[in-house]
Amino acid sequence: MVDFYYQPGSSPCRSVIMVAKAVGVQLNKKLLNLQAGEQLTPEFLKINPQHTIPTLVDNGFALWESRAILVYLVEKYGKTDSLYPKCPKKRALINQKLYFDIGTLYQSFANYYYPQVFANAPADPEAFKKIEAAFELLNTFLEGQTYVAGDSLTVADIAILATVSSFEVAKFDISKYANVNKWYENAKKVTPGWDENWAGCLEFKKYFD
Image (cartoon, rainbow, N blue to C red; front, side, top):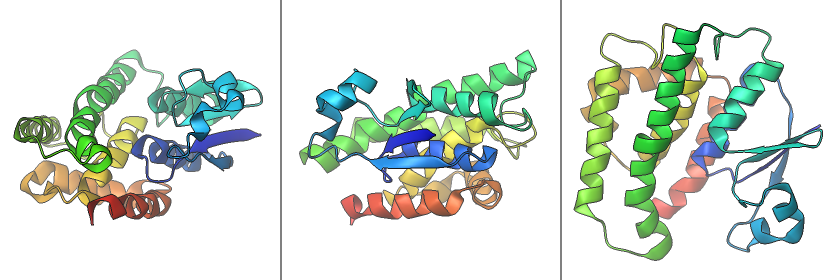
């Protein structure tokens, strides 16, 4: 039994849902109401002292940090290694893009939008410039490429797909970045679980309407 503590609007949670679908793992989804503080209960703190989502519990083995979960799911349950190849160079490129996502792309989303959404703060033009810089980089990475790391779909594409789809519902204009836009349209078609990802995006969208 693989328990999954999550919120459907969260892009890190949505990336796990898509990878689980890709490797054929059935998740026993457990919705956590962060606004009600359910992540701070003694029961959940025992599972994850960092009290973050997503959190996965696979037959007693607890893991958090979405990108670590993505890799774990492929390494344990993938019928092939295509989503996270064993080749050190291919894997290094995937890791690089996963770290770009967490440290640059997703971080730029969090820094600009979360203060507005959750603290009613005014928009910060300097933080918006960081988003534009992150998309410029991603656009450069994707020059002549169908996928973000290598020549086939990997966990890096799926993590970044979850992030970019959050930018879409936040009304960021992705179309200004031709390579990103082309990659995004293809990734939506070829990624297992896209429909559930988009349903979660629409739930998140209420914060921007």
